[in-house]
Length: 425
Length: 130
Image (spheres, rainbow over the protein chains, first blue to last red):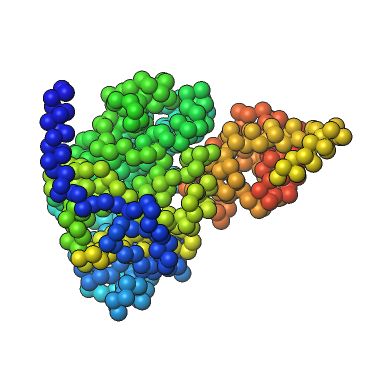
């Protein structure tokens, strides 16, 4: 076993030089005066658009139009199309669309622009320029909105399928919602219709959730999911459960409850089980830790659910994931993953954390190829976030433009879209 | 901060009523932090789009039953408002009348709210059995 580990370490060491260029933000560097954020050396950030509304996920067309889903309607519309026509890095044209709905999911596949409300997947023909026109076509409708974890972000495999996150309207599948002393239900009935990724065929319209296939399960809520085209596989980052100390003060102190459980980054094959609600990940324990609602003591493990590729710090809230083509970026970025962490609310009384975009170096086969680094931080505009409302901005959505520019959305302070470009050619 | 603490201690020393208010304050704060602060935050600021803030809140400055009912029955039982938060608040009816009164009082007298005190009798009156 030791020999295998040593060999693996050696291979990792040999592979390391190819990724040496990915260094992340310099913790000693100042925040940009205009944007307030910090990006790695050689990169530049601009405010692409301000006051766009509650911006969620985004998609960028080949012609450079940025389509942004809005969680709250602006003048009755649930999405906005933005374009920088004079090349100064700032959007100068705005067109609202998606009348009468609001949503989180946004994506482009096969010449169509897709939009995910909390109950449906809609699409329009992707126009060459500007916002889509006319009535949207309904690909899926009637998905249940139970408010909690009801957003429907999605991704495509490039082979005619859409993969939709159907979050669990629950924290830990307790019999009584978020109530101290209430045990976890086993089997968790929520997993029948929620708590997974459902796959639908894009050649059909007018589908219900039952027409789809439950592709993967045991997922509390995966706001961050993307198909890795190089590796040919789905990946996701899921939000871990809240409130370990609130419900189990004898097992978890404030510090443990702030750090646990880890936010999990997974490679997901068909039929995979991510383990919610029966277990969680504590990086200091080998295997998945049995959830206390299911009799766990903070140490006992369970074999239900797969282990993640990476365990990120607790409660950081991964809200979007994209694999970058990396054409406009330095070598080490090719095929790697950007993850937008919205930032925590469940670390109090300890300081909140997250509120950043990280980069995970990955090889062509979809293996993690090095340590993750911070790609952009400074969004809250304050050094220590005690209460989430104090954060000026919180990363939410990510998209890569045809020119390699990275777009980052924030739904706070009226809504903002940042644009990050590599200048150090 | 220190000066006001000294003032508070002085008030406690000279007044039995002040001592009662101080103990109620401490118990209310401890109960709020145990049962409410994880979601509504220690500063009452809530979490944008997920859990409401309690600062300058009409419910906490309005009729005495508003905060009590929210604690007793949870958010799903309340009349829909124009607020839109994704997380549902569970019912805390398993807490005692006194505990709920202390929490309701803490919320109604902190976070820029001036709704005033709530008694255990006020809570008992609003339980379904009454």
